[in-house]
Amino acid sequence: ADKPAERHMVLLTPVGKIEISGCETGLHEIKLPKMKSTAMCEVYEGTEEMTEPLQQCMGWLYAYFCEPARTATLPVPAFHHPLLQQDSFTSKVLWTLLREVKFGEAVSYKHLADLAGNSKAARAVGGAMRSNPIPIIIPCHRVICSSGRSGNYGGGNLMKEWLLSHENSSLAANQPGHTTWILGL
Image (cartoon, rainbow, N blue to C red; front, side):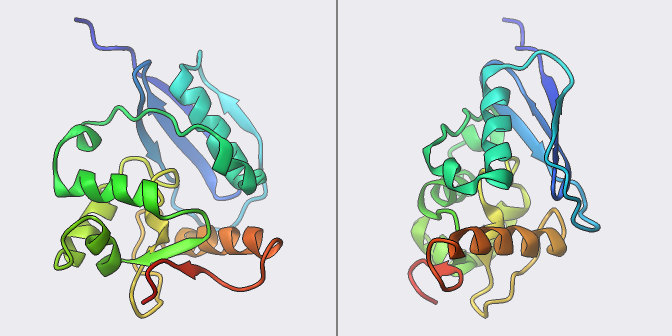
């Protein structure tokens, strides 16, 4: 059978241009820019006809940056990336992160390893975060060191800090306090 055609979109966000690719079946990848400084643009542009997963992805990311509370009610697009279809620890960690760690929450590498069923695999969790093909939607920026330091991030540490503080300040409007740790430290 023919492989479904890959399509590409660019979303302009406060953290720069985010490139999204996918086909009819699902998302392939979200590519983050290296963040230099915070741009305030919130406009998106499409490069070609959008598939449903790309449309859902654009809608989800647009809401994430502009009206974060809405992401809780929006559908998460289907994923179509080989890494997420394998039966591997990496895949299990990424799916666990998507399901368990909500907006404004943070989890340590060790506790995410616990949640994914192997408490000794904190280092492997770090590897899984590095290979996450769908950042922001699969929120690897919410995985931080037990010490409270943010740890490394594919989009650069400035972006990780920005995303975490964006989530905190959006939540602070409803509830005072800082990042909610799940399962404590």
